Image 1 (tube, helix red, strand yellow):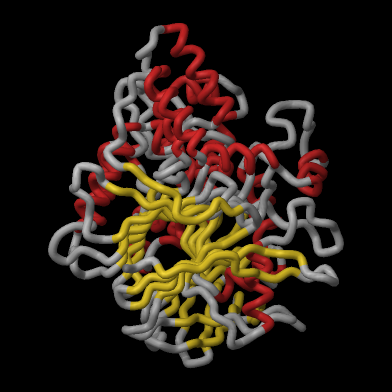
Image 2 (cartoon, rainbow, N blue to C red):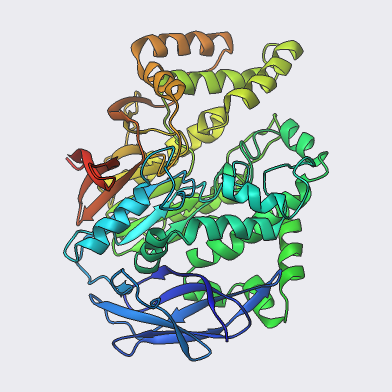
Length: 546
């Protein structure tokens, strides 16, 4: 009998359809049955000995909440027997409903319930407990996870024990993951957490990778990539990372129509074992990043979300360095400008913040100039070493891309049909803040533009991070940054910006509530309470629209 190994994850949801992702223990027919007669069925496909299905659910009614169950070969496997959580549901929006979008990044898997948590309560666990414990509690319409869903290079004690039983950890890559099977261990550890498993079964999710989904500072520079490609274990790690991301995260980002038109998805499902097809795809993606698009668009009524790949889509040549290769940049522009007037809010999801503390921005722009050779060969070597040690690889480290995004935001937010807000949603930097740009030359948009950064969901926040980012936002930090920029002869960026909220440090989530042309932001942190329980506490809330 087939058993449910992982999931269900509720992924794509629109007003009448949805997709539900599962992993089964053997080949089978996976079925989703809604209490209102909606449902769907799909055969599992096989990758590296694992059996997955993405079940399309049709027949849903707009503006309804529908409990559902999952069956494998006709046997009910979800909800679990004696489950302490409420039934998993699929909620569809009615036409004028608000959109509540919760987002964050950087989540270490929480330890088992009987172990102390060294980094404090998990924001996703705490959100799940709140929703499960109070049927009337406000819940997100979608959960946007902006990278580092799993940590291939920072494994837990339990995972290291599992790895040690499988291979010799004295051989590279040591206690980091090495292949596809070891990636599946990371997803089991993260998504079988009872609270998170239930949360992902009942709140739709959008995901994009960041560096730790593969390795810290993935694709920092051409020199970095050359060094990694000379490492014996790197190729298997990268291919396994891309393959497991496609299976566990990317497929669920796509709509049923996009899935139906995807030749790779068809090829993997049409063969008894899709491993070779998927591995060939990953090889092509490694050899030519422009051959694949991980970015995608989701529309929620009059809210447009563009999730942008800022890791695999980079151009690393120092003379043509770009955060997005030309095809990806064209895609982003087309999606942002298409049908202006048809959306009230434009959200650009990029794992890496566009607007950083001023000191960090100027240091990254200066470092890019050094690595480009603006101060000579010796400074270039110093710059490359510094770039890797200090993680200087955000939008500011790709100055033409930073400027191009500023210009696109100004264009998308201006003129007839301009949205009320353009918000850049980011994570990565292990603190939360709100920053607002201005265009000194008077070409700024009509929309209100905001950088909304929220990280981590569940991770360490070292004192050095707290002190460093506080100083980075300070006046003294800004003065020091301009000295760096002057040494590199860096031009002034096309926008100035100020921090209007934060910095906040903790395990946290931001929630945007978008109703018509109104936008409201709330930041909540997971805080331990007396007796060991945790709850989400609101630490900041503000109305964003003028």
